[in-house]
Image 1 (cartoon, helix red, strand yellow):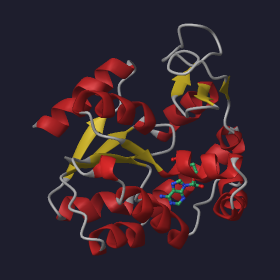
Image 2 (cartoon, helix red, strand yellow):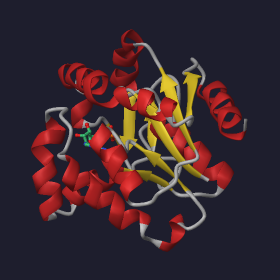
Image 3 (cartoon, rainbow, N blue to C red):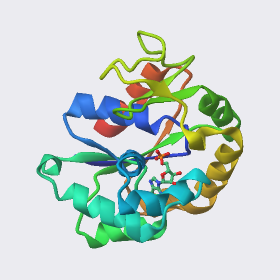
Image 4 (tube, helix red, strand yellow):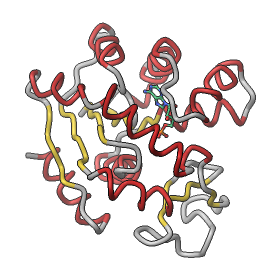
Length: 210
Ligand code: AMP
């Protein structure tokens, strides 16, 4: 099954992508994580993306489309995948179509802007494997330590409150039109983000299977 997760920054796409990945046994592909990894390794692509990312802006389409092309060509995507954070613009969605990638369903996780700022303030990510946590809603077993790999949990630079506002604006202007794009294609399913992560996961899995 080929899936896309849509939603505002902080709506919980990453967490739901991890759940889907575990339940369906398909890889979860996050362009944000791939870019952060490239940045850590000091690659040319990472350096090109850095200033956009730090300011809460989108990285240019040709860079992320290149990333996705390369990633989807790998063997582990043969039986399906879940895209977390791609596409984020109409040209990115069109590029996916042009690659001949057939998407089965697009799940949009809906969370009001007012709730997002609160969620982002408590969000922590593993600096080693990218898994996401929350100081209130999704605590790790040991404070500050990733359950999956033992890496340190840190706040992302672009989760600073002023950057979050910019990212929300970018989401509404450039990414939200994708809902209409996939609605017209008959692929869109809306999931209301719940207080409890497990409740959102149950709705997400039901939307995928329904
Ligand atoms: P994320 O981890 O998905 O929240 O992504 C973090 C940042 O990476 C975004 O704010 C963008 O700067 C960049 N990014 C990730 N995915 C994309 C994409 N599909 N298109 C453009 N920029 C992206």
